[in-house]
Length: 138
Image 1: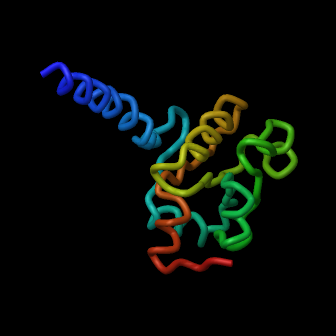
Image 2: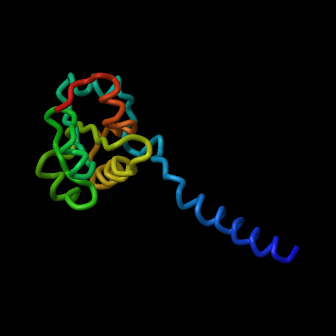
Image 3: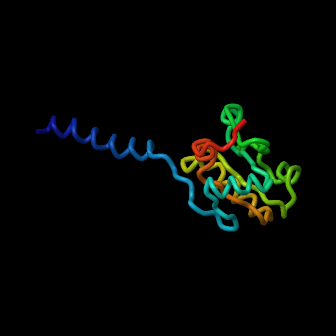
């Protein structure tokens, strides 16, 4: 019986330590001060000429993107100064990344709102939903 607990206890401990580490974060459904949009709504904004801002990592950007999207990689290039070079505080912008398991667009949208941008659209489903809908890519 003693050997049973010597084996069982470490196995149970591993379950409680490993499983939470493997669970991926899920991005928030809304961002205060921004409007969450679906792929259909994002496409309408695209058709209306609204700027799209891609905040994914370089390899994702290189693999494909929304046509004519601006690019500011969120962890290195997304700063208030860099954003001010491509958009006025009143300009409409759709911020996207790699969908609900990607936190980059939620963080970028929150920062943009905090910096005083007043027309921010948070495309939570991001590039995967855009591509799945058959919308144009480059």
